[in-house]
Image 1 (cartoon, rainbow, N blue to C red):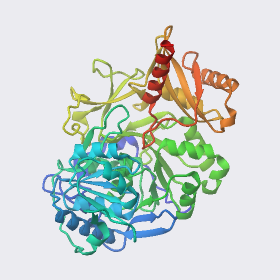
Image 2: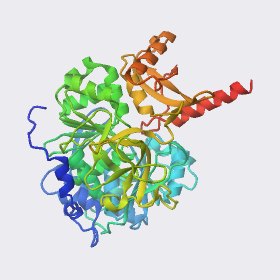
Image 3: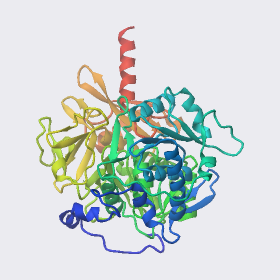
Image 4: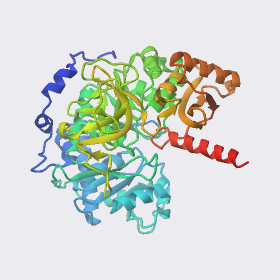
Length: 558
């Protein structure tokens, strides 16, 4: 436990479920879901008394800058005035194509202050990805910076642009100079009150298997975001909190910006790129005690070894992981190398976080398990006929709509949503319900491999592979086979590239065979330099399957 940490008793999970009332969650808000609320009040104004910190920003050079809630309130008012002057009305969408800077936070809060809807655009997106999202949302304004402005020149039908530019940088014809325009605006703007069913974010799915779909997020989602921060992350007033996820994606926007600010807690943003060294530097220098991020980042920390981690061992009180299943070997390494409890937590852009190994609630924690439903949700495992399954039977994870008062997703933006039917929202993820009520992850429904009649989840095979010291990352897919329907093939990124050899491939196959079973080991291994991933770090197994299908087609045609 980090020095200075305050010990406290942790409520039992069963007690938290029994005492959950949606009215209690709603009472945490300053406003009212029916009579009116504003996300900027909830995440900024109500905490602006005194000099409480809202943002600890580390710029690209590592310099620390502090912003109070009062400062962010004034900045958000200026932004709201600017938006209104540009014709933005309550319910309109404002898009942000910005790095992790104070201007990003001010744009988000100012958009909410004006009663408008914020749409994140990840800065790694190219023009086509941006164009699709802007067309879908019908955004009225884009706020960007000089480094990203050029992408918008290739976006057909691009709305007006406000540019955050450095001194000396040119301003494109017709653009609004963000800083200059804000300097002329007052520091007071009465927040526009909205209802709980009104939107305050417009998200997009990650687009791993097709064009991204719009995910409208209503203000009542604030209840779920706050519950996750309290029960799963266990964010405490004395914590230094850093969520390293980019706010261009759901986990970053929901839980690096909205969640902590909603609780009146400072958030931390680092403008620089992720690296093992910079991550350890900031944790050590700033005294981070609560860290959140993705398994991809945590696997890179593990690959760098225990010696690199030694300087922060014992400094982290809790670590939260989301985005993909957390491999058990990562859990063991964090315990040994960092003396930090890392907990796997599950969610989707459409849901927020709904199944967690909670830091703030006491329940059994098993490596490889996604944990238990966040109080306020009821989950079930469904078969192909939409019947609920008993424990230890694989099926699809679903949310029981009638018994999940925190559920806020009602369907994709202007699209049919087949996943919602018969009183359930189907996540598309295959899992098993354990006898104790926890959920064990198998894989995306379209990632599950059928081989010789066995159904094999890629997660277990990948987790066994990264237990081997030579493996940094792995992705597993099914490859068509005339005898077995499919065979398991693994794509492996090694810790050191010069280790690749047929002998090592055989060693890895035997390692998985011993760890899992005689049918669930990879019968083919290909060593690769990197795995295909979405910009948010999720492995794109469908790209690997497509690559294998193209190879098979070429072979059959020769």
